[in-house]
Image (cartoon, rainbow, N blue to C red; front, side, top):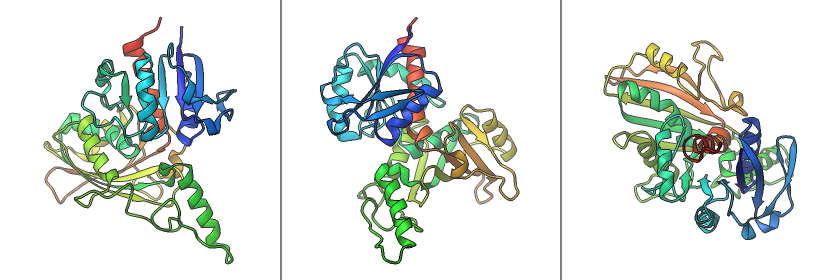
Length: 340
């Protein structure tokens, strides 16, 4: 007996990817429904070899449905997630709306699967920020071995993290640059993104950080360990899919780089590509469509007593969003709902 699953926001980049991954991983679903706003009503989306027509989210009754994977942004989630949860349908939310509420679990299954028990509080589970998700997968096994004290991370985030509008803007600007009669229009991002990098993701906060940087700090503490100190600089780069991160960690105990490499190789959700030669590392192009978090460029940091550097790359539409949500759904089914 399988589950009845709703994918909310099924016409967006992440919603479509959720449907793909549910099919790829052969999630035990007896029924899957694709939900979207009224303006997208009837749009066809793929679910494995099947085609689903979207239904109207506004009038949908969640009663009798086991779980709903939400990918519609915070404003709409605020309206529809409580309705689904109240109807007995567990919400797995990809927005930032519920991530920082203490009674709602924020989960990366390879890192803190035990937090799934908190779902009983409100029938809602939060999916972390894309840049946080891939980083904590790499941090957790190292933290278990040597206790991480401090993390310094710089991100290089693809335009798909800003949705379809971000992808379209990079594409349109790139074409315009090669067309002398066209104008390079800036709409989605704060400055031209084609052939440029922008050290600004989300809004600025009082201390000068952006909210994206704050998210990485708050979420790492909630998922891994509240004692870890984190400082982040988040940058948008002209890459279509795949987030990259340069990570520096300081640990309480000394951790040799060779041992760290072995630990990561044996850890779930990680692929280590770390050859000290031309091309012996992962880049965003190699990670697109893959489930894993790729770790490369492991080396000791000689400027501090117990320091390591590494490079971390992942498909942000998968591990950073859709895959993690489906993994949470699998965890929910195995540990909480457990249908026979």
